[in-house]
Image 1 (cartoon, rainbow, N blue to C red):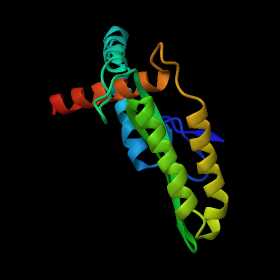
Image 2 (tube, rainbow, N blue to C red):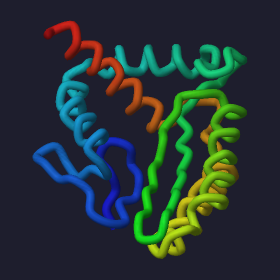
Image 3 (cartoon, rainbow, N blue to C red):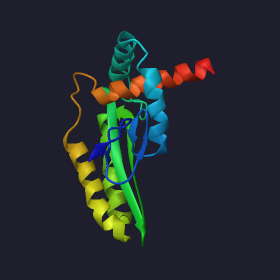
Length: 162
């Protein structure tokens, strides 16, 4: 199975593909174009900003760090229609786990109401539970946080140049 080049999510069905890689949706595909710009930013700047975010306060609750990237997964279904998503979030561990538990609860309540949801719901719930059980190492920023910071800096660079 393929992984999204932007958010590293598992692509179960479909996805989008272009010269920058394979992506889970159009939002991540747009981030893929930023990856080309992001690769031109010096690594020293990326590391400096990543450590600054990692050691800073949580952007969600304002609490103490360390801050890292957490991904929550959710699904909802209605008869033959099923929609699922993975939402990355830069936050402290407490806020990240709350989002993942919310993903478990919402998927458990709304994921089962359609035929495709019967398959996807246990996957999304399992992904959240694995995320809750495996937290990033608090002593150093994760590669996923570094990638998110790289994309954020590239986005600022693109906005400034236009």
